[in-house]
Image (cartoon, one colour):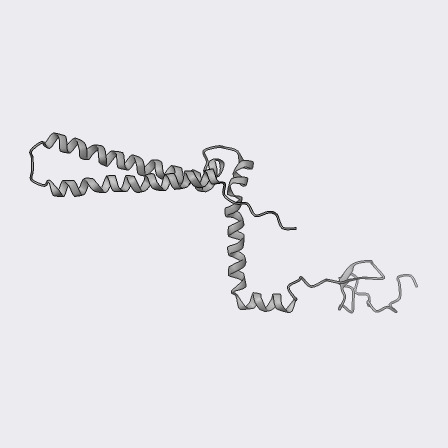
Length: 165
């Protein structure tokens, strides 16, 4: 029975998208300082006020980028999966959708390899059943196609004599 597919909770999605929005606003704020600097290049009237405004926008933008990146990490991996909470069991639960995705990606990649496809088609999609034959002399299990025991060398035919006979 396949375990149920877990989805990322809506709260984590909201935190992720909030972080993404904050990061975008931070980038806009930070980059805007370069445009205003270029627009007012050589204009020293009200220099202190303009410099203070650009400094606040630049550092504020960098802070928004940093906080947005943290929120995106927590939203993507959950509090325990991102390392905010130190709880290994909860981290496994938080990261379960991503771990399941990795397994699916591996299966997708394997299905594109011709040799793997040929083997699975030859086996009918199932593993081949292995039959072993017990040696009548020593009791060792051998492949069903073996003619002699791999341990004692006794013949594995139905008419093989037992030890002491």
